[in-house]
Image (cartoon, rainbow over the protein chains, first blue to last red):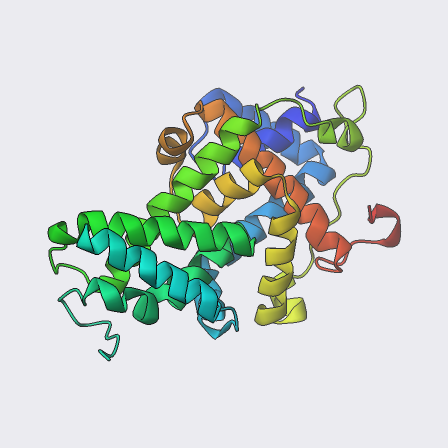
Length: 87
Length: 196
């Protein structure tokens, strides 16, 4: 029986690729017996799916964000770019 | 002054780039590195790279997409550099999470409700961004490339020059850290004794 330390790593990896058969079976067995690891996988899967769906919202938030370059930064950057373009 | 238009297929004069795309690129970078100074440096690197590459602008994509594409490369470079500075080792967090038998010290609680539903989407994203900023840089970097840029493990391995095993470990630690950070912020209905 694998430990929770090992199972939680496999659970995370299962979100990134199809696990090899042996690992997949071992993880599944562990999950049927372990509520903590089941909860962990559920939580990180919620996070994973939310990000999948939410990338546009994330970018939308960025465009709403107040953050902008300062006037000084813009002047300095503008001068650098101009100089590079002329070179 | 030229108006930035997403459908425009010609590249504006370099002298106009900062005014047209500076803030856009800055916000994009800031959303990923969460540090104003680094974000500004990355915008500068991207703009200078764009100067060198401007002859190769093909018009297949909008200038905006083209600039963001260059910036993405610079962000990946940045994560690779910061990654190099910190060798991947046992970061000690595992000892706090698991006992010597590898069992949870505090088993994770059941996220009965999606954190997105509980606090509303905007709040969730703001909180997530703060949690992401608290992670060790390399974990945050790999997580960002994977979950926000949608890169697969192979592409991240190349960007970071690390093995797949290390990418899995970094993603695992990032997710673990984010789950705990989100729970500490009241997401997912953890019970009192499970709060860190």
